[in-house]
Image (cartoon, helix red, strand yellow):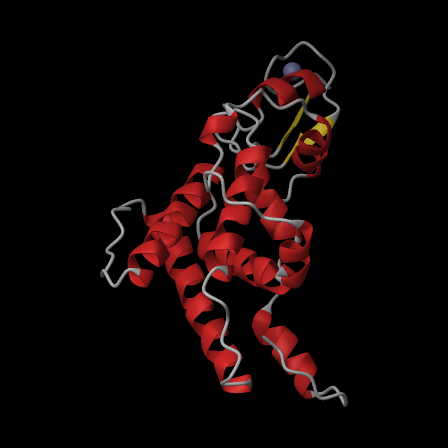
Length: 215
Ligand SMILES: [Zn+2]
């Protein structure tokens, strides 16, 4: 059977976006460009693992000269996973969500945090509904976690630099995964792979014998 796109080469894979058999060449050319790939496509995930990323200007790296070392990342892994999972919940209703939406959302979260710590009320300028949904989900998750940590031990609130550090880390992951394609979803695929359902985790925790604080 010939490829549904070029009609010449031999069709070798089922494209979940087009629901048709296409050739690897057309998949490679159309992926995240003329084809709006779903996040679950195995060929997309495979491509992200092997593709060569275009060189990026290090001056554009999010977070400026913020230094995030391994100790910080290890200590705050739970927060990285939970904020990333909140992003997933934000973009899940939008099949057409892109990495650029996620990057917009994170930038707004970073700005709003900055404003909040300097006592200013911040209204994000994002009008993009997908970015707004991700922004709202992340903000709600930050509030929830901050509250839980404080309730668990009022003498140990979440240090102020942690949230912006984690947001910067996520922004840098997105920045690093950008493959330059117009509909790049490498960051969204990455976030989906680390998704943790907080409600489900809590339910499992409740049925567990060992008492631990779930954040
Ligand atoms: Zn083809």
